Structure formats: structure tokens, C-alpha cells
Length: 152
Image 1: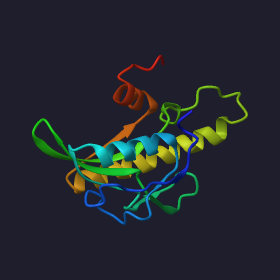
Image 2 (image 1 turned 135 degrees about the vertical axis):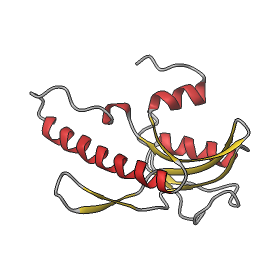
Image 3 (image 1 turned 90 degrees about the horizontal axis):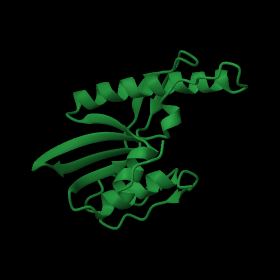
């Protein structure tokens, strides 16, 4: 499964990488695939990974924390230069938990609420900085890299 892979990514096209190309870390196989795609795709003009910190107030403890979105891209699409702030996340982390009798229900509910707070602040940051915030799941990754639709 692509999700359980961690390591340090060696940037090939370092002139495209906007941050420090020696410290790029992936926390899942999905992130690793996105990095390889950004690095090799000629339509991607510039990119970075976890280089910006967005403050958000956590519903878990009411305190401010920092959220580091997975990617920022500057990409040519339909002849226009577009900028995106990207989070790579499993689809099941984007929906509230359904089984209230589950042992993990409270933990999953808190995680969902924290993610929603992060995403709301990311949308605001993106709007203020001339880009769009999007979340990419395994479904979009499967379609993009294999050309096949997910069975989910």
C-alpha cells in the first residue's frame, strides 16, 4: 500500500523546487508519488513541500498550532499559470466518523474536527495568496497515475 512509506526525497530538478531541496521529506507513498510527478512534469513550474506554516486554532484544545500543507504548486493548466495549495489525505479522513459505538469514534471525531479547522485556515491562506486549496485523496491519485478509477 502506498500510504505506509516514509523517507527523504532527492529533488532532481532543484531549480523548480522553491524551498530547500536538501530537506524534502515524504510521509506517505502517496506524497512520494506526488513529489516525483512535480519534479518530472514540465507543466509544473515551481513547487515546494511543507515549506509554509499556517496558524490555526485547534478545536481539540482551543490553542493555536501550525499547519504545514503537503504541497504548493505553480503549474501551467489550459495555457494559464495557476497556483495550488495541496493536502494529500486518505478519503476516510475527510468524512466524519459514522459508527458511534466504535472504540475509536471519539478519537476519529476529534481528528476530523482538527482537519476541518486546518483546511478552513488553508482555504483562507490560499485566497489571500492567489492560489486554490485542494485536498487530493487516493482516488484522485489512482486516476492520475494509473488512468483507472478507484473501486470506492
